[in-house]
Amino acid sequence: MKKESNKLSRREFLKDSGIAAAAVGAVAMAGACAPQKTAEVLGGETSANPDSVLDTGKMEMRTAGNGDKVSLLGYGCMRFSVKKGADGKDVVDQENVNNLIDYALAHGVNYFDTSPAYIRGQSEGAVGQALSRHDRKDYFIATKLSNFNDASRQASLKMYQDSFKYLKTDYIDYYLLHSIGRGGVDAFKVRYVDNGMMDFLMKEREAGRIRQLGFSFHGNQAQFDSLLALTDAYHYDFVQIQMNYYDWNHADGQRNVNAEYLYEQLDKRNIPIVVMEPLQGGRLATPAENIARRLKERDAQATLASWAFRYVGSHPRILTILSGMVYMEHLKDNLKTFMDFKPLTEEEMSYLDTTLADAIANYPLIDCNDCKYCMPCPYGLDIPGIFKYYNNCINNGDFAQTKEQENYGKLRRAFLVGYDRTIPSDRQASHCTGCNQCVIHCPQSIEIPKRMRQIDRYIEKLKQDTL
Image 1 (cartoon, rainbow, N blue to C red):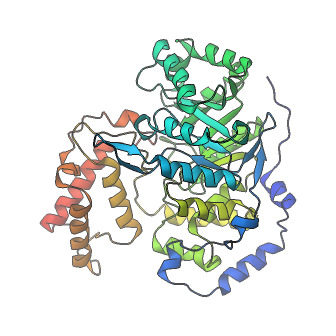
Image 2: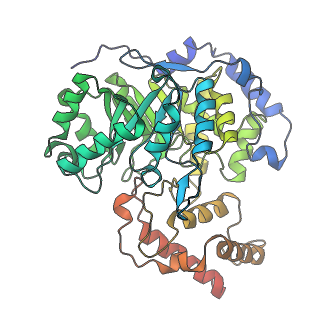
Image 3: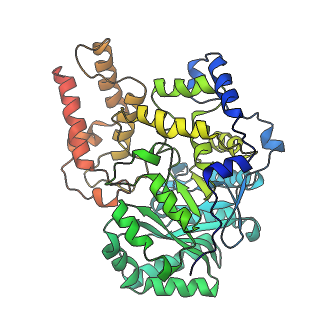
């Protein structure tokens, strides 16, 4: 099935959105003249839009191939706050989920993305319970066939059928083949073709129980090309990709692909795009201080996250941008960006994906997005916690690199004390056995045992004072 062409370039889109080229100089001038703000502002606690936008603003909407009017801000439901249940186990705080989803719906958010794999199997149920309290016509549900561990037809069918039960619905608006790419077409065939699931899902789409069928991608360029070559056979209605201003041209090429390439390939096929990781796992919301300062010099009132969201939303093929909002303040702050949405100028976009991204590339961070797919570790390691602590120390400048470094002693002690306080001793990197069970589950293809060894060696050098 060949889609009718309606390709619109980024430049044309920005022009049609009322962003005149003459405004570029004015924006740059205003940013340069803005007064320096405090560390609180550098942390992103303020917003470019006044709070009144939550009362008077209008959510930016995009149109899907079937005519759906979808909110540009999509709700990613991979993380919700949890509390201890009666049995002592962690359970989703349903009251918090209800409040967040109610507020999101009231302010124009209508796309909710979940999966049987999220929050250790609890996400779909929590989302279904919250959404089912509202009119079904007021929201779109996206969920996935997350058959990583058991791709048999029986297990895949059960997962599909269970989604309807947990989500309390008789149709799914956007259904995805979850995290395909790694292993190429061979892995795709095992998970979806050999077991007959692709034929089944296409029939479900014809019957209306699936309204739109697509996939989420993690892999390299050759794998993406091979999967996209199947478009004529399966008629993908949308595709979900990782896209942000850093990965636009700075992906490593092995574990992920430059978002510019992914976007262009989908754009020329007129396939709507759903974006995951617009903040690159939070890295672009809390970058190193010198990176944050550059953005604050341009606009002292804008949050760092808003720059990243506006960058992605300024591309016309984007249908919705997923953000996992755990707390009400996260939701409200994001709403301020997407209500009365203002696309970036061409100059601003180029600054982000070239100049700023080049500067960010100099920081040796680990590309963990805290999805927790690697958990639980059979040996008890807090894998995402270790990576988060390590990355935060680099971003905050609290990273001892050499004895000749100014304040080396202070930085050394701060890292070691903070590590012991943050990560319990029996869950630290030194306990990694290199079993590799976590690696196959990581959507970012991080070589987790290798990284654990590197972190452990670094910590030992700090302890021995031999750095």
